[in-house]
Length: 197
Image (cartoon, rainbow, N blue to C red; front, side, top):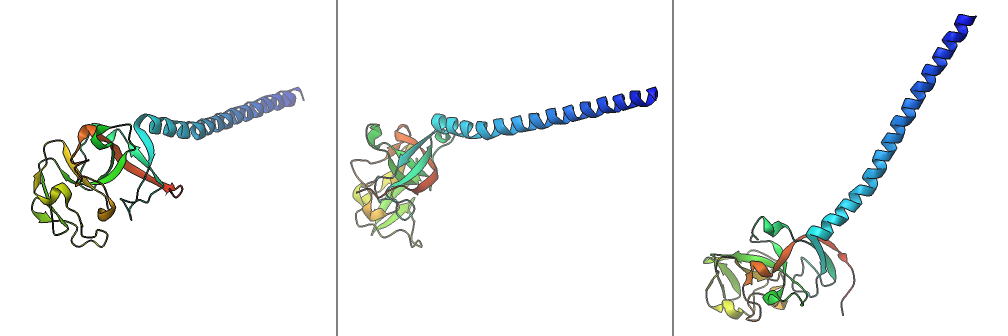
């Protein structure tokens, strides 16, 4: 009988120890999931604050791609490691004036390229662009691109997707966009927040 009690105590002790270890393991798992659930959004918030920025599209110059009142998130870090490419949608400050609201436009030519607008069609390096696109209308105003322009190193020619409703590199007020004027690349488009009147 005495041996039986001893075995029973040993079994009871082993059982309790096993349960305690299981509870500790479950507690650690819950703690790790809790940390992950709270840390992931916090890390995302910090990343956006350090390397990103949110801005709002203030005009219809990028329709149909972007609409007025839509928020966009800008990656401010990407152009520290790479150069803007043709097709990138960027946010820049006209003439580098950061007191103004950032303009949102598409890069259509980069340093070393030649740009000209003839008969409403964009030519880059002598080749017509956008001719098969249903998105882009023929441009009514060629602006400073009526004559051929060669872009210098670190210069970018930008246009709005809504070509006839856009103040962009064709305008003498804006002209070529230089690297130091660029805030960053649009990397996420938010929902339409409100109609701006």
